[in-house]
Length: 449
Image 1 (cartoon, rainbow, N blue to C red):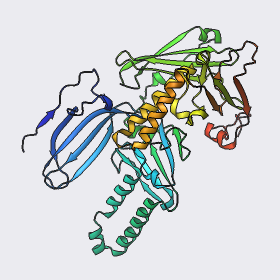
Image 2 (image 1 turned 90 degrees about the vertical axis):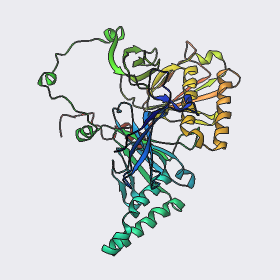
Image 3 (image 1 turned 135 degrees about the horizontal axis):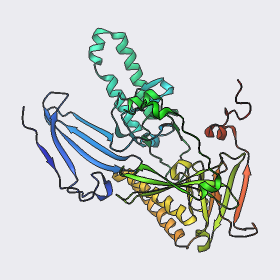
Image 4 (image 1 turned 180 degrees about the horizontal axis):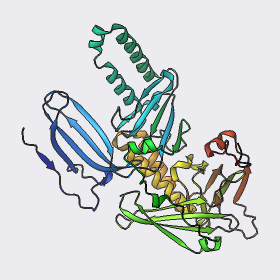
């Protein structure tokens, strides 16, 4: 066998081997090149490995193979970080050619369905990759076209049926009629680009689900069958006052670098509102900080819509509780942020706007050099307007809409008559109840059939 050559670029100065794309030296990227076997011609080609971080996908390993002998090329993507606690299901309505250019990050465990054609790509039949909706269709066509010449000789009818189905797949690219494409990933690491930049992606719905025991085994996640661990623990009596006065700490991993760290959890009572659970994580390795907030009293009977006018520096200091089911809108900036974008957090108006800016910058870096110049220009202009708002130059209106009723903005008036703050409660729709999972919830006589 020929001797394998391994060439590695200069050593990474930082503690993590996964570097952000924005920190790369364009002339000397940290790429490892390995001589490896070509599965197409059997001769040796070159595999290039790049360990990096990209938004929405954490740490990843990019692999690119190229054979100079036969011209065969292939690229794959693998998750280099920890597996998410839940899987993800993304349903996208493709209505125009712009949707075909949406960038998609998917893992090895992503299944893809196109109900219109009754077509399904099982998980692990296509490798993880960064691609587009059109790229997924093209790769599917390439897979179906393999061995067609042999089929035409051995089974002409099957070959004709496949040719017909290929033409139906290719017709999707003209988008004469809208069609739906569904991604389901048990690792929870699939992401579809939002082409609406500053508005909610109303063509795309995202839900998370708990993996089954079999799906956990597919990912190599096993629970220890230890009788001692299965024994019920003796219940301990805690009062609300005990929990409010104590900070609980438990071990976890950093969501950014996956290094071991600790999460602090505390239950607190927000005046004139309710009890909430606040969780904060700080990583000593990379300095990453996160905070998450959850309601301590479940879903409210009604949804809530909160509108506040931000006209001065005193408004930036208002406390804000944004739950993980709450969406945000700023009409003056034509900005809509879905509940999944920022998650649940307890912060201030200024902190909420700063987190929105960081999220938008992260989304912009996901598109990279492939982003359209017009989109890049609009993003730069929007960030400039947001900076002016943060500097107090422009006034804005922030609208929080939470179907679960678990969001809150502090009033600056002691008597509750805050002219800048408007709170409206409303009855949820059936769809909103469905998304919250309470339509089929039995809350009375649940011990009977």
